[in-house]
Image (cartoon, rainbow over all chains, first blue to last red; front, side):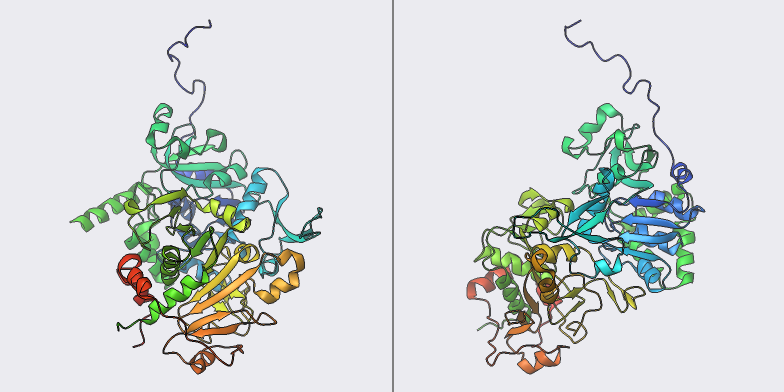
Length: 309
Length: 253
């Protein structure tokens, strides 16, 4: 009874249903009007295959929380966005996001600007079930004018240089869902990033309610093989944060997914150029969005092979 | 005597912004800022810590290196940046689509914020940076469109906004603005912008004409100092051998 542990004979995860699903399954669990956080950063490791599925769906009036890139831009171009909550929107190699800019300049979306640090605190507050977290970020700037959800309050503590000082209360960013793309995952929702930065993926998943937490992954591996895919410190997404796992090789394309693939600058340029006119957008959409994901990935492979030749 | 380019003078002016900073995260954003920060560290501020522009703190002198050539000192994912920013251990040099007389900066939008004529990047980290840490600015295209009387949206706060905050504004430390024409500081009684030096080849009148607000101009405006022989060698052979600086600020001569 107290001797050496017997060899593992029962299958891992015995009694547990796996969480594998498709992009369309994720869409099926979302509703119009929801507040959805999208992981990644600018044009890096965005869950683009799920974003494309949302564009093709009849979902509408979404509030998007994001360190913004083409995720927000695509959803704006497709008329899916009611409100954007963000600190910046960029395509990295193209500094400003043209579809997002068009939406802002035409007044098509509501705008809720934040400081990057406030995004962090808002997600952390939601994850910890707190109404707000305090900070100095925002004081003195026009953020308090442009984002009326922010409040200031007087510190209840004194005795220092800042005796009774004014602080900003960053309210919890209450989410209905969070969607992130990781490099590796198992069927149960444990997942790993292999690039330089996890960004805010873990915090977004922790801030979202049970039932609304979705990841896609470049590759699905068995749990017993997961840790060996990288360094154990990169194993930062736990199945306790995840309700659905979408196998999605190439799922971040055309954004970067280091070290699996770099950004596809040619497709990103075509995407950016499609903001020039409704016709250009319609053409981009029919070529790259209104097609099944498998066909999208086939086109990417063909374009890559053509470049190599 | 070799010709010293305008970009090289700008590099030195940026480096000078970090003089005296000691051991903190020097975070210059942009091509010439990155080269200037590296120059400061390679010469008079050896304890500065600097990023690779992404998620690592690196010890390399060269401004842009291949990933495999990085000498990594620390893993610094974006989230770690707030540990430096909120503890006051960072001196950032940001860009500015607009900057005004008291050093308020706009990165977010031109025109009315609710319905902008031009949407820019967003507030980014500017409110948190400026309320917590030493901040300087880099403007490679000095013009009345950038140096405006009042910015349309205050993303980074200036000295007038800081003064109005009382004790909550006590960590605001707006240092300098470096442009392609000169160097500016806020060493005036009301902390409005002052012309500190003009780059060689630029007159005080050039600067005044390119500035959309009333600038404090001392009776004697010195020239920005040129690089020393050692600095010039470092810039040209070690830090920026590809000459990226010359593309950001083309030489007028």
